[in-house]
Length: 173
Image (cartoon, rainbow, N blue to C red):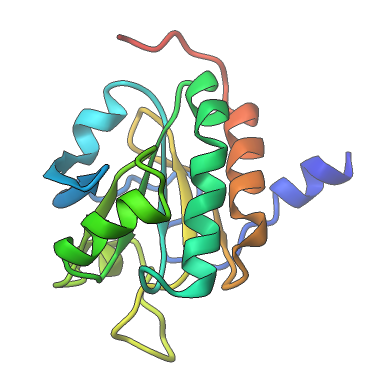
């Protein structure tokens, strides 16, 4: 019961549970290779965990990316994909995608901060950076859950719990 109560207490963000998310495409990297990522294409396959992070290769961002990489099979078992987004350039993220993400999930570059701003993930105290903010986006394109905390320790756990709480649907594959 306590876990369910905690799940129902998301942080304050502009996009609330049930709100439609802005669809975007962005340059991304997976395993050091760059490609064009489309949120709409990812949502067509199932729920998406979209997480924003301040800076590749910083200690906490590396910890968080490693945690997502270690849990990627659990996300896949729940039918979800994971994408990280920061304001870092694509070359920096290509290296980060190998080193910290262990080539297990993509990270997207948003140097113009349009995606970051669209998801209200801009760090207010340091506007050159994204805040540490994670979303579970349902295949319908609506926010199912979000969590904001600069401490990277609980993001993976909270995203997995939110995915487990989603109504079961047959994904189209």
